[in-house]
Length: 288
Image 1: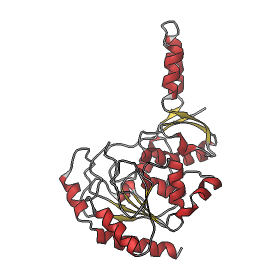
Image 2 (image 1 turned 30 degrees about the vertical axis):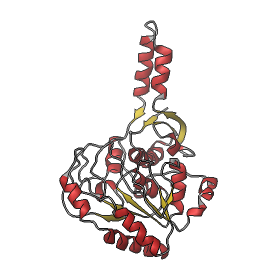
Image 3 (image 1 turned 90 degrees about the horizontal axis):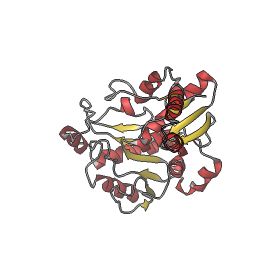
Image 4 (image 1 turned 90 degrees about the vertical axis):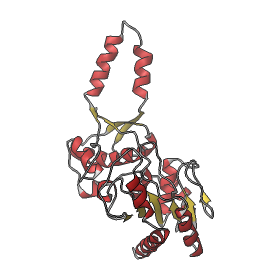
């Protein structure tokens, strides 16, 4: 029995699904997954069982919070720890993609088709969001709990939405309820779980996003994304070559503190730049 323990963020958990593909190929076994986002592993053929990350701690406290059996509880935790694989990357992770660093930490190498996230949606889940076929999905803000340095200039995503609406596209707004509000969109902020969000993205013609976890979710379902980068990281470290990655030149900072250069580089990406990139992405998708 082997346990795959994932990281904290949605992006890290999604990247771990690619590592899981390689582990299943090389070890020829199914895994117990310990994670904060169990829904990302539903219907995964390589998963034996899914544990929420708090499950073992809660059970240990409930069953072994007594001096007489404390030693037994400690021994069981040691037994578990010896069977855990925890894919991780160094911080900062320079000159290497996060998923490659995670695979190396697990002692494996990824095949080319494994260098991406995997989410296994059911036919019913995909059909339930078929209304989104041909729509453009957007996310207006990046979460700031880890770093404030991924956000774009306020108001520019609205300019992008306005331009796309004038060209006749339907726009669905995904993300957290706390993300900046947009007008002239189908507002689904905070209304979907990760699986229904993935199903919407699976139908979308394009996803316009700031660097963050949903970029990996879009890649998991094969949807092209236009990703707006600041100087925080490089697309070669956190993104995908199939996407349209907009970034101005400069070394990545990987800073968790407010970075003036990240703000400056974000300001150098105009709404016109994003609209031009979106049109290019839509043309590419229409020919595939």
